[in-house]
Length: 170
Image 1 (cartoon, rainbow, N blue to C red):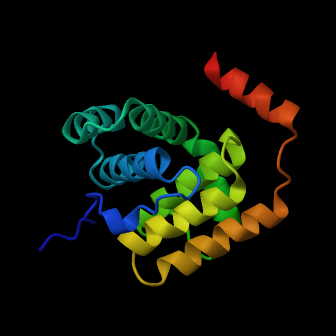
Image 2 (cartoon, one colour; image 1 turned 30 degrees about the vertical axis):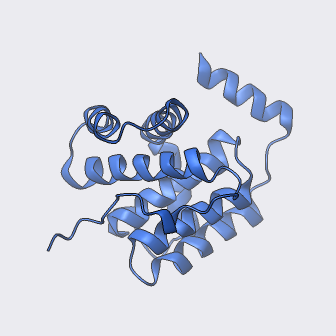
Image 3 (cartoon, rainbow, N blue to C red; image 1 turned 45 degrees about the vertical axis):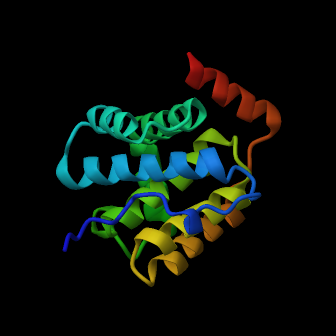
């Protein structure tokens, strides 16, 4: 029996009709698997992502968003990890379980840097990932960290979010 989480999609894990459910839920799952493997084994994220996309053959939309998440998290990790530490100060980021740490990284990227997804959707998706892949206490921990972040961080105005997205595109 492996200690690695089972990342294979299960129809019961993906709720139809939920906003961003299909492509984005699968994208987050792929991004989580890539970030988990890269973090745990120090494999280059680009190589892991290429392999995952080759094996899974997701839709173009899901592949693009998974790629976007992996690249976003890895390129902004120096910004993301201090935010996680700020909202979970009792745990150094390196001591948070690898799976939990990477669920948080994806969600913090979406909430603080990306701003394309509604905060509630981002939190719900992160908690769902934790329920599927992490320890029993992880969903509450992740919900608490992200809920605190959502309460204290002022979302950017539409103009600020557009400027950030334009800068990222350059």
